Image (tube, rainbow, N blue to C red; front, side):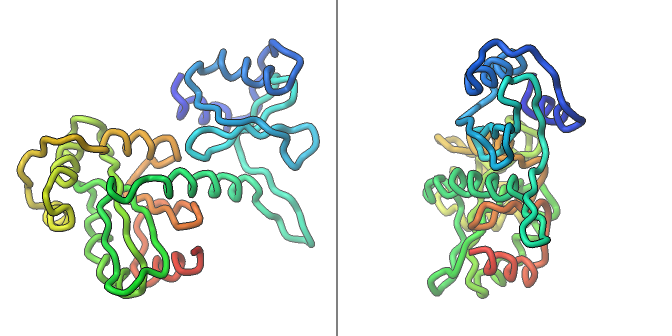
Length: 242
């Protein structure tokens, strides 16, 4: 069972299964192992809600479980403070995603930096064949002028071996990645790339953090913005999230 199918199924409600251990950590892990042996569980801890445990997955996403492992839930946990509802799940997931994304070496990205020191940065999962990715790229100079550094990572929507994948490999294998990205986003065909590259690894990482389309924009604080945003609006959001 793939993670996406598991999460989709869990989102429909509560899933009852048989717990195999009394200890919450063991019971929850036993349940998840039966459902999906390769589910990348990083940690299990008590949530702010009594009796509910939070399951941290690799990549930052989160599930919830009962201590006996008999119930699983995917969704948002809110806490009401002074009349306001605070999304605890979104806060925790953003923190986890920020760590994962900010741990990517800059040498494995295609980075467009402002002339002056950057005020903040965004990380964009991109596909050179994506129309809205091309539109966003045309506005990168404007984002740079606002002090926003744009860091590209690869996300070939059609998967490894697709035309988009090959195009991204060509960008990452080019001597001048910035120029190659400019050409690719202008729909120019690039020479076939042949080098060790992180395209497949970044595609897998994108799926892990919940990317399902491009452009997917990750702010410096880990919050994800799915889809294109005009440069003025995006710059404002990015600068507020630094």
